Amino acid sequence: MTPERVRVTHPRTTGARPRPRTASSEIDAQTQLGAIYMTSLLRTQLRLALVVLALVLLLLAGLPLWFELAPSLKDADIAGMPLPWVLLSLVVYPFLFALGWFYVRRAEHNESAFTAVVER
Image 1 (cartoon, rainbow, N blue to C red):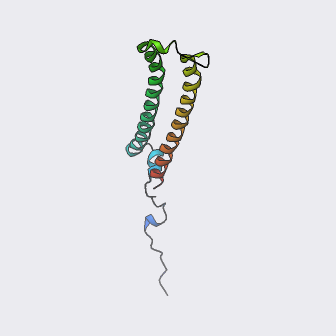
Image 2 (image 1 turned 120 degrees about the vertical axis):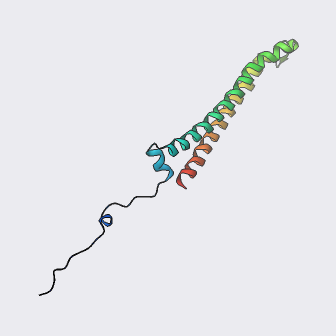
């Protein structure tokens, strides 16, 4: 009579193997490392927003200040229109549009750089 065959296995071979921790899993699990990743992205985006805000405030607060410091500019005309009106209609809006375009492009760049770091 032959002995009965017994299958010997390690208990961990049938269980799920732990996956290596990635940056995205750290963020999803809301661990401390994931919080550091998210904080770095938020800081970068906040820094960009503050730079753009400072430029907008510099322009919008700078124009009236510029006209107060040089009162002769208030009376200047370009093509029959007062210089302040020309600057507000022909300079401010294109500047704001360009600044908005710059902000969107840089924010997308920051996010793609963050994604590259997370996927690495």
